[in-house]
Length: 406
Image (cartoon, rainbow, N blue to C red):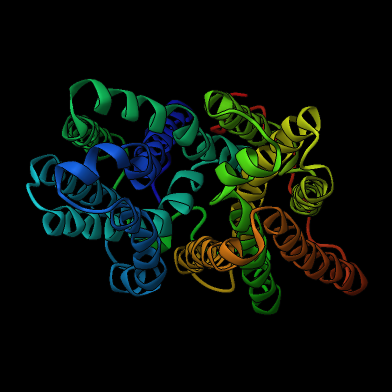
């Protein structure tokens, strides 16, 4: 049995691990913002520096499930504490890197730490909360990852421009040490199998496999355009360079809104919370293909994509907690693999289409992939209703249950 955790301590763990997610995603994407600083300093091309991001995603895909299996008996307090210390050490080494090879090596270590973090963090942070409010906790946990592109990467880019790119990685190393200390202080130590969210609440191997396929397709659809959204906005929509940053901020801010909206619906309408973001994302991408030259429409559609991406990510994590056919840690590793496979696959598809077809067809290709994911999950939901309704969560208790704040 897992020890009882007070509501205040459970919320503190949620905030701490949300900050950890913020730090990981910021680190993953930071080379994009600092590309023009890192490339000349290490005497490498911009495309080679770009590989520090795409290679990172590939490592997460390959390592998530094996690392989770290797560590499934380690208490999560120790595992997450060591993971954050590894994150800090790798970023400190990145700050000191004098060659591209050393920097690439530090990225490999950080990617391995991230693969492990995402595999175990969701079940760890959700376990102390009552089943009836776990969807809200999932969404609030996801705000850290959602805020990273909106706040973390711009701040890291600004710091790198002012003080050198190494300073940004040094600050992240310090943040990693602080989070590791908080994890070791706040998380109770108990066997992973005893955690409150260690098993799926409605396990179903077939439906979980469908969820993984749909996740890879949906995220791949998003990333087919998102990876190359800058040439789309410049070449198709005709925006000036000066407004690119505000446009991307609009998309990121809409993602924060999407996460907060999902927090209100995941517990009461988990299936609708999964299908609605895919419908919005599909409509937004196909709308960009049709109306990409209409600037006011493009702004609204970019916001729709940002909102849908964030809400879909929270809904997938929530659904995983229901359908996991065994350990939720292993299931979460599978979800992480599907996400990063979608990221890598979408980026590769967009990169293959862009030279020959231009940026506009990327929106169509992405929209069709998302439509396939939506169709797959809608058919699965209909089959599920034909078999019988899933058990619904009880209403939150008014006692000392650890209910997350809105």
